[in-house]
Image (cartoon, rainbow, N blue to C red):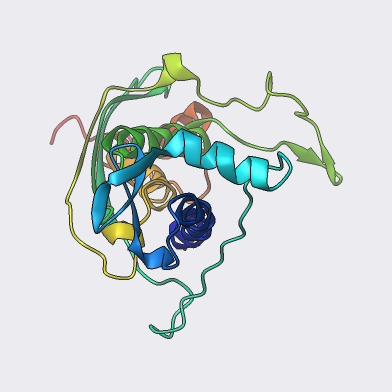
Length: 237
């Protein structure tokens, strides 16, 4: 939705530039104008062109130096839903649990995501890896310590957020599709993949230790408490 709103605002800016340039070339029809290769030009006569920067400067001079401002909006009305489109993704977590300390170490993360058309592949990669970082925090370390309605850990020294040094190696890829209701075929890439990280880590911890986490974060204390409650193995078995 945000992308469509931005596209709507950009279209309004584009029309303001076209109006200024059409006056420059004594053209009455704005839809004859086009943008490409850093220029604004007349589609029927491409030689009649002006650089994009010069077009912006002309538009600002015509408006006493004020910046070009437009307000875009978008409401998904045709699909009957709050969101115009839904993305899909999956994650796999490979973890190692120290049986002596209960410490969980995420060795590798794998992410696959359908974000529609990738408009900026580097930004998509950063969003997917950022989702892992955000989610590992509430999966393994972030917790609010409360007593009688007061928060006791009131700084990031006690509220443990993972840093770049805590990030596990990750492999992320996308399944590119085309979303007709998205801006240029795109969908989201980021918040959606913040959801499966904690379940993936929790399932891996269960596979390694048998501990079923029902309240995050998955702390060493909880894993050790679970191990202490496990009945001893029958040595004769």
